[in-house]
Image (tube, rainbow, N blue to C red; front, side):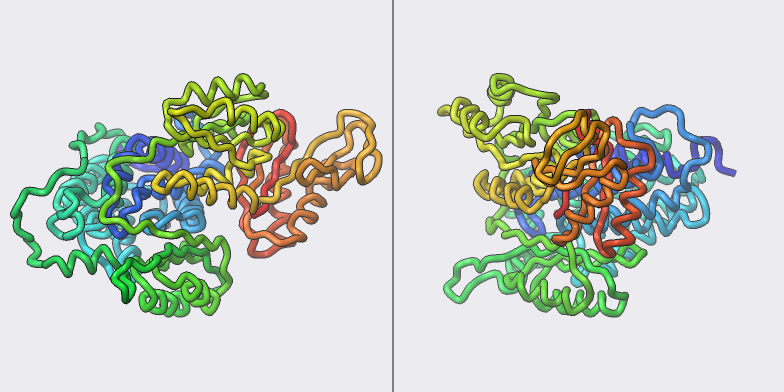
Length: 559
């Protein structure tokens, strides 16, 4: 019989996810610097962190475990299966990059491994084996020496572990993964040539090590995984030549007829209203267009697709033929021999208020200036940052002319300051989700600004006094719905005002609604609004975060 501490319920899985976020944050720069396959764009650490964050936020909403240090867990919380399903679904929807999609399948394997009860030594073995199978099935052309190899070895070592304690099986899996990670350069020529281990596999080891610690074991000590100069004349133990290395890293159609690298794009989208057969056909079509093809499901009707190719339009058309598309992302891939030795010297400063909103920005790597600020305080905060490039998310804190003045005053020969057009917290979050330190500052700002501009924002407030608005006179206590800075809804009932505001905002279309709950949001309003969107606007995704802001009962972003 398993002893105390040897089983994981839903709350324990959530806490493991929170530990994973902390671990990925600590190792993000290390993982980014290792990233040379399939594309040397130094973003694997970012992608894993973003994907895991989506999964953990969903788990926290399900369990109520909002803080990693929570000591008391409700006795009748959701099951491990319920939480794992929620995490897998959120990771599939929020996946970033090739590594993020593979991570979603690791979580799906966890969900399928705990259908009969909590996570135990036995169900962990099953979960790892199932995850390994799901990942291989999802890839059009599996390549050894990557995350899938490490996952295979972790599953094998877990199966071979004779100890029936959960922590012992977790440690066996992690140690097996660590051994396989060290061998990845012998399996993949592009890694050997660059003197690195696989970045995605390193990220997976972080998750397994955190599972060891979360189950009561001692955190394993790992060496520093850094770029090493390959020894001159070292033989290729796999027997593959330079052409094989180029095939692994360059992809299909990587050169134009003039010998100049052809533009390559990373295309990702979410797919619904489809099935296994059509998803399999999509995988085949995408494989004909490019490489790094992954098409995965969350087990509940949603699929995520990823491909690197030269014809982004054809990749999108293939998805349209397979089902209903949403959350389409197309990014230009950097064409370089290897990633840079480290991340760009770029920092992000966000202005926001509310403990939940502060945490969201900090988790995404931003420095936060909290509360109402003056131009002088913003200028001082920018100057206090050590970075050569500073991107500022003002989130409506100051008027435009003051932001321009601060930006001019903050620039000098050692620092470049770029203000992003974010007029609200939800726009700032949308922009930050697009941040990629591997891009040039100009490209990064352009992508982030596009995300902010593509997010319509609104707010629900309570009128403090009788006043005249553009839609009529409100009385003290009325519910006010704003789109941007303009009042568009007045209703004596705050809940009715919120529903009407959503109808107005979604009447212009939208694929994703972000709801940021304030400190005084009425109980049950988040669930009511989610149900309203689901019933009235099928196919629209809803994400709810605790913001804790004092002014707005709810902030709403529509993308």
